[in-house]
Length: 483
Image (tube, rainbow, N blue to C red; front, side, top):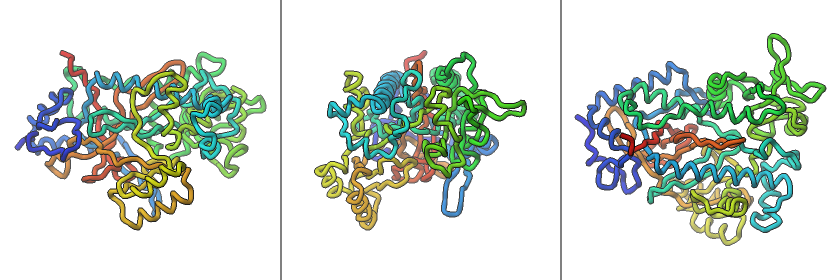
């Protein structure tokens, strides 16, 4: 028995593969026809091949629980998510526009603060920011870029358009899973790549290497390292993967030291080697125990002074997280207009600021139908999905909002798009998803061809984070007009 798309029900949500008439969308036509040619036993066999490949390749992520850290195999669904190349070209332009404006904003905050003086962003928003670093005031990193790697979360609403849900500018993760998803899909659905109309994703690590190389002070052949918190970090698989792909060293804080001349050195079996660029995968507060958390054993004493004096480059730069704030997010359309004189190419999701009395009253009154998010959490933690919450949980969040209104925003519960997902042994059902493309900015800008599609594997759930039980799919940017 094969798939009958006419029987597939997306339940009034925008579906990525199948339109409201039960017909495949243009970018999904070849995929839908191919899936229809497979019987359910074959479809299940391909999923089992993917699961086995993930175990053999050691693709894992770490979940933090009360019982301790648990390593799990990466959850993957073999039904890809296709997007038209024509639509993606516009989306990529919007992502570049957004990161360019955000970098101008961060640079302004650590210098003249013109956007505050001109009344576009309220001063108290920045003064009460958990991620504004006074140690960064007056620093001008290479190309005046602070956030070199951004993971922007996009959602598609019922109108079929992409919206930005949030910006991740501190230590965004997930790109390795995007690349591995493609590798696995090529193994289990090889026939679909024969025509060449699925655009490749393999250029990312070259682009990342070039972006990092362009930051190096005083050398054309920089020594680049990835600074990891270590094997117990939830993204350690990615740190090791990127180091291997770029041919750079993966180091922990104990592998680095700052010399008397102010430069950073890496311990090697042949002695100390100067480091020019650090792609750091640890948060600001753990970078340098002399400046931030004095108990940190993850960072390097003296690292901030080396960076401040231009003797080492860091990506993302310390302090970039000031724009990685869901309250600042609400002002991004004005930030784009202010610095670039342009309207945003991609819209924000409507956002209500609890720091504003009228908006706070609206949020509290409508908490049962809104999504409430803390300003600086990630990974799906600390949020309330109103329609899926209890009266007790709503009351608790109202108290949290009243206690610290600056820390919370409200957003409508979106009609997140869906895509067919293999459920059980032989059934395709719609599951909600989002998309995290990765944007690079240095001397040049670059956007991944698609990104990491994350799927809420539980029926009806809107929470896609792997730490909260979500899975993922390969994302196809399809040139539907290719012959």
